[in-house]
Image: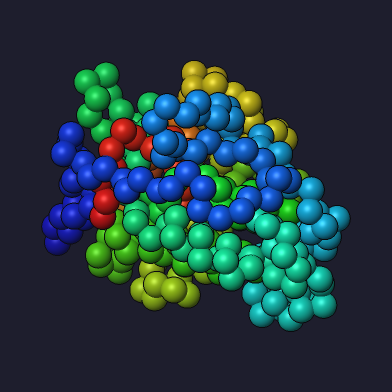
Length: 321
């Protein structure tokens, strides 16, 4: 049987992309403790804030929730190992503050939750911002759909989920990821969703895989998703060391991830059954997605595109899905 055609969203490329709507420079009061994130839609004439070299290098806010992060990291390990129901039961006994504004009694207060939904309600084509996913002529090598731009409440939620162990954020972020999947692939049952594997060093440090927990939340919001955890990190990869790609530039990232992933021979038949859609949390240079696609191609898989929760650099114009 012939494989399904390339999904609609992944066929839309070119200069006729829709421009993103301009937002007001100041929409509501900001907490001074929040780290500065580049305003990608700044008002003309205003000096832009310099973009940090890597999303994982942003400073974590100093709210009261920070000293409780060890408890929430333990809850995420419970969710990864024992199931989400047990972690949710335990989380009721741990006090929380909003990771974005510091409001008490909620990991993400209603106002900040609405902001995250607003920042992820228009998935867009994002490969133009990733140099590793474009050829020398400017044509996409791997189409990517992002749920939102890595900024403001979305960026802070991702950071807090990954580094502070705020377990309940997996529901909000999982729904955003599900929305991007639905926009990219109208029939999710016709593709195989392949998550990018967490590096050994990151897993040992955190005790859980943020992407896999978000995918569990996405499958709740989007029934019919078939997740195939077929990619593994090569044992000789330098990414197995703690630190991963933090602080590395474009060329260094590409060199470090090259040859770092593979598909086990016993799983090769699984990746060849359906077209594959790669999934990752944050898109930066695209080197990680490029390596994951290479590994799947070598195993006989057909990669039709990728979906990410957030893209750090938006293209000049967006192709909304």
